[in-house]
Image (cartoon, rainbow, N blue to C red; front, side, top):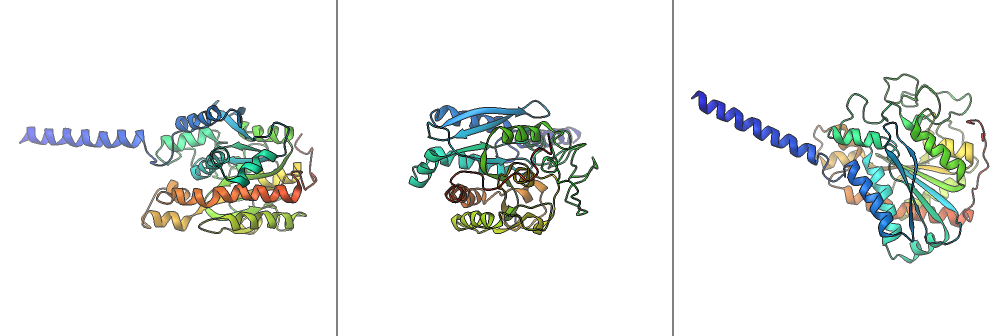
Length: 349
């Protein structure tokens, strides 16, 4: 009898171990590991050398590369658009959308896309927070002690950009200087290597538009985030938002000012727009309701609130062409030139 109990316990332990090994080998199903993600980025550049140039614009806290894909078929200097993904650790779907756009630009034979990339260059930073991505993947969708949003220093990168002088907000999500907060802004502006990489990039390049890919509110957001007052270029913002929404295949996002959702301080959109005159937008991919429906509304880990499971392809298809045609609309209106003047340029020098 004792031997049978021992055998049962051993079998149970082996079974449990096998489940643990499987979970560690492929914990998040549809989503690639960081190593797989990097290989995909590198392979795209190898497969399309005439259209894709791969650069490293910086390194993360833990010395991981921050990749930039420059995509164009023009042989001459061209107007530039910027797409960034993965600034928040657990928002994998935003990083995947950035890569989906990269694939579409070089692999599709859509005449409008072919014409667009013959006229402009689209620069894509698929994964701005590789340390956070690695941590969440390694913890099977959880963030460990640091949490699910932040970089390796525990900073919310989308609160670490310069703040408009005098701007204040007491909203709990706006950003603060408390290290234990999910919205910790860091000790000072641009304290993190990831945000400095973006800052150095936009100082060097003249982007006429930018998109930052997040999840999971089903929204297309435009500046300002720090203030409820309308921005000078609000009609341009609405036109680009309408182009994005009209091109969505399955589900139309609400187009609105960021502040109207909730105010933030030190976010990338306000920084690019106010300091460099770059119209910058946030795309919140998917919806919490849809992700909960994927899981049958049962209690699930935070990762599956932020990322789709059954509707993974649904949201990528919904938003990828919409992003491209929003860029197309912006190029048509602006002729590929910045439409705004820098209002606070030089404040972060």
